[in-house]
Length: 154
Image (cartoon, rainbow, N blue to C red):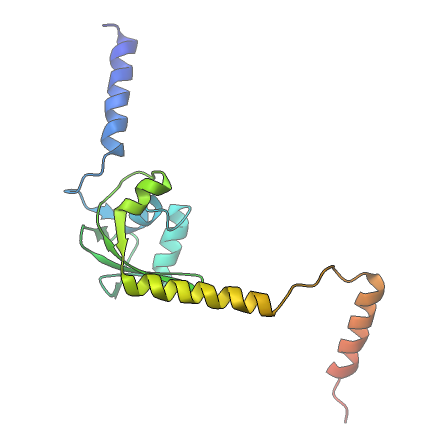
């Protein structure tokens, strides 16, 4: 075997080691949230954890906290919230179909999230967007109207 062949075999073995989900090795919380596709980047995951939007076993935590199988996570993203149980650990980001296997969401969490989404859709339906942006003439009318009623009269 030549050097190139040996080197490429070592790279393939190294890649396979990183791709596996090793259940014995605890994973950083920010890395797990990124691998489970709750956040697009680890920086966003760290920011959410530091902001108190992610709780590990009911406690505020740090991005470097170790996640283990069976841990309970509460994740709040925008107006949605997730109550999940960690089923598997991952060091690498995988396709969404694989990432969904990393956790199990509670039934109450699913129903709560569905009702929140339905309420948001209903609110959007009741408050339609304007068909167009105001043109120059309409903007001037808006400014005059706002200025007329924003000034306090003695």
